[in-house]
Structure formats: C-alpha cells, structure tokens
Length: 269
Ligand SMILES: C[S@@+](CC[C@H](N)C(=O)[O-])C[C@H]1O[C@@H](n2cnc3c(N)ncnc32)[C@H](O)[C@@H]1O
Image (cartoon, rainbow, N blue to C red):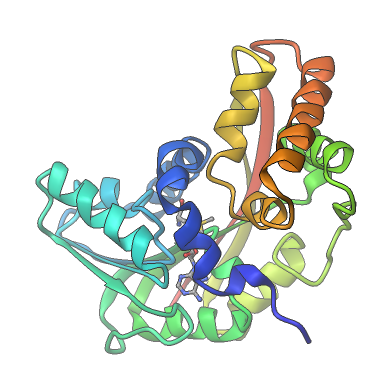
C-alpha cells in the first residue's frame, strides 16, 4: 500500500512556520477542549505526541508540572521550543521523534494527547499502543481527528475551492475505515487496551472579514495544500489561486460563521 506523503516529516517541515502563524488559529480551540476533558491536576506529567509547534503543549505547560512533547518534524519542534522560551516555560521536554516508537519508559505519564497527529500515522495501531504503553495505570488519553468533510461547512467550502482551482484535485471520499468513523475510532482505542472509551464530536466556528482573509488563514499553513501546490510552477499556481479565491468570494458572505467538527476520543489505561 502506498504511504501518504504526510506520513513523512518533509511536508510538515516545509509548512512549520506558516502552520504556526496561521493554522493554529483553527487548532487551538480543539486543544483547549482536549485539555478541559483531561481535567489535569497541577502536579501532572503529560505527553503530547505529534505536538506540532506546541498548540496543546504550550498551554498545558502553563498549568501542569511537566510536558513531554514529541514531533517528527524538527522545524515544528524548533517553533515549539521558541514559544516555550518566549513564555518562560522551562517544564517542557521537546524531542524530535516518531509517535509510533515513543522514546519514553512505560507508565511515565498522567495524561497523553495526540491532536490531529496520530490520525496521520501509517501504523495507527502502533501509535495507540505506544500512547497506552507510556501512560500510568488510570491515566487518560485524548486523541482527535476530523469528522467527515460533509459535517463541516468550512472544510466543504474549501474543498470546493480546491476542486474548482486545482486540476485533478480529488473529490473527497468518505473513508469509513479511518478515525472519521467513530466506531473505528472506539475500536482502535479499545484494541490498544484503553477502557472507559468514548468518542465525541466537538464543533468550533470561525468567521472571516473576506474571502481573501479566509483563504489566507486557512491555506497558508496547510501541508496537504502545499503538496498540491508543489506540482505547479509559480505562474500556474497564481492563476489557480485566483480561481479559488473567486470561488470563495462568490460563496462566502463576510463574517458568516463556518463550522468545523472533530472527534475527540478518550480512554483510560
Ligand atoms: C496537523 S499537525 C497537528 C499539530 C498539533 N498537534 C496541533 O494540534 O496543532 C500534525 C503534526 O503531526 C506530526 N506528525 C505526523 N506524523 C508523525 C509521526 N509519525 N511522528 C511524530 N509526529 C508526526 C507532524 O509533523 C505535524 O506537526
């Protein structure tokens, strides 16, 4: 089976800076919700797998004793370390590494997270099993993944723009075998040994001043879009981008809230 290009660190390194500047706006409220679900105590030691630039790890470090953050993209980790330094947070241990082979001893953490990260692992079962291994008995895991595109007005609108502007951009197909199917999500948590498993939808809304702003905020740090873009020369891409922004301008009324939904799966070791 061919592996998704997003299963390697290159595309994430390429967008790390722009992801940090723009994409985290959409990710941050989901991290806040995940932290609330975990009900962390101030003395907790938590692990954030596929941490990106610290969307969850940085706010977590402000409220618990220690955060271990790991990502396979060195440039994402560089951003995370920079944020930790700027915020004066020294209780963060940040490492470059693979979420499918965690460099931590078993029974190490009071809570474990992977927000929109483990969903990309080629071997998700290993990812869930590793998260389970490093948690202490009784510790909670919170993992997130996007709900089907049709449940999200924001993703549906963007995907329409991509198809309008990028020749050969695939029409999104529902995939009942991945974590966008809550039954699969629950089954994979259970198979890794988690108990008290629950998968719940969580929706956030976002509004933009204009189609141009929407385009900029939602695509600037997008690794999948960066991959699509790399197939075209600069001039061709400019023309395609123009078509996509026109598509959005014809359909997006400024300041109208658009929603996006994720599933948050929780379980206890
Ligand atoms: C969509 S970003 C999510 C980042 C962050 N958790 C957030 O919510 O903003 C996906 C992250 O997963 C990381 N990633 C993907 N596969 C990985 C793997 N096998 N091991 C470690 N990190 C991985 C990428 O480098 C990227 O930083």
